[in-house]
Length: 93
Image (tube, rainbow, N blue to C red; front, side, top):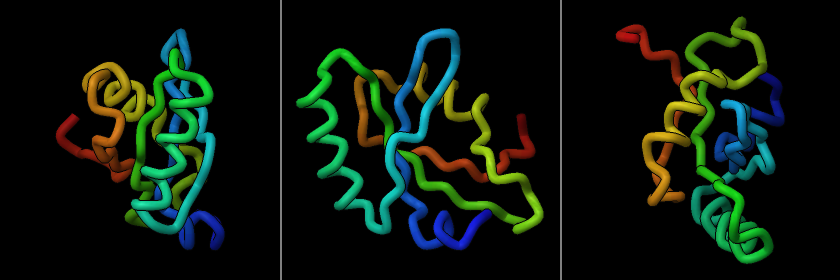
């Protein structure tokens, strides 16, 4: 995980078709992420966005978010865009 990503753990993720996701923004604080999310939803009301808290247990992990966990959260909570998702590995899957 890069130093920039460590300083900006709050991500706004856009849920795309075909189980794809896109990190739109990285921010330092959750209130900043929520404010940014509100603006994005006003600009494109049909798009689905989620807030993600991106943490890694080990610095040796690759820098890509775990797309399968993000996609599952995008489908699981479509009515709550401010629900927090974590990219921390879940070993119970």
